[in-house]
Image (spheres, rainbow, N blue to C red):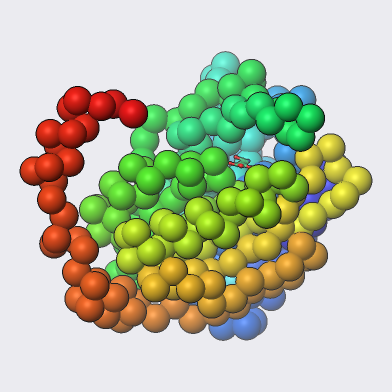
Length: 269
Ligand SMILES: NC(=O)CCC(=O)C(=O)O
C-alpha cells in the first residue's frame, strides 16, 4: 500500500486492504513496515501511539475482528513511557492481540552519497524474539533490518516456525541489491516460507521504499511478487512443502556443530 502523511488515510487504506484480502479468501493478512506514518526518524515521535489502545491498534483490532482474519499489522511507531519502538502487532480473527514484536536490530547504516539512516537516534531496540501460533501454524516475526540477521531467523526456525513474516521498507539502494536475496537466503537456509511486505514506492517521499512485496517458498523460490506499485498479493501457503524440503535435503540433521562451536569460540567474526 501507499503510505502518506495523513495517518487516518493510511489506516483507512490498510483496513480497506484487509477486507479486500478477506474477500479474496485470505486467512492471514500482513501489512508493511510503518504503514500508518511516513518512514523517517523525524516523524516517529509525532506519529507514535501506545499499544494496544492507540487509534491504529484499535482500528487493526476491529478490522481483524470484523473481517474474521488474522492481521499481522505491519509496523507502527510505538510509544511506551519515554521510549519509542518500531512495533508490529498481531491480531487474531477475534480481535485479540496475540503478538507484539519490537524491531530488534535498528536500521543504522551509512552508505555515503546513497543512504544514511539512524533509527537509533530516536528509537529503542526491542529485546525479544517473537513467534506466535495461528490455526496451528507457528509463525515468526521480524521487521525489515531484522531480515539481515540469520541468527534471529534460525532461533525462530528452531522454535518450530514454518513461516517467517517481515514487514519491511528497503530503499532504492539496498532494495535492488539485497531484498530478494536476503528473503530467499532465509527461506533456503531454514527451509521455510518467507513473506516480505513493503509499502509501495513513492518517489516524492523523503525515504523512497523499494516495494516488491513477495512470498518465497521453502525451496527459496519466489512464488509471487508485486512490483513497486500498490497491490494485493494473495497466495496459498502449502505447509507440506516445509517437511518435503526438510526431508529431501536434510541439512537440519547434518549440521557439524562440533566443528562450528570450536571455530566460533576462536573467531567471533
Ligand atoms: N527499514 C529498514 O530497516 C530498512 C532496512 C534496509 O533498507 C536494509 O538495507 O537493511
